[in-house]
Length: 62
Image (cartoon, rainbow, N blue to C red; front, top):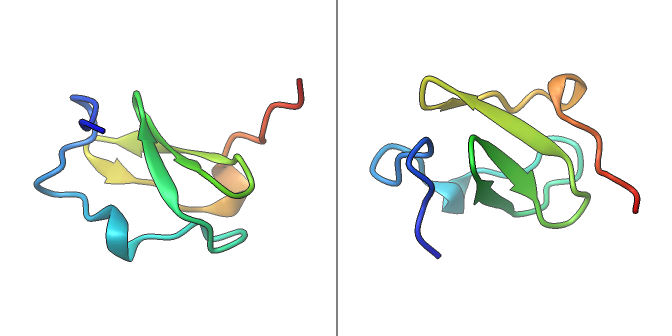
């Protein structure tokens, strides 16, 4: 899967990052990283992921 333009693949190593809430894998999604396990979405601001569980968007329940 190619990285979105706001998530720079040269600077961001997803293989060493994990969701701080559940330790799930993170996937790039537009201007944020989404946890594959719990669904929380973390913003990427100026190329820096903000991996603070309290600042994450809650998973959407459809």
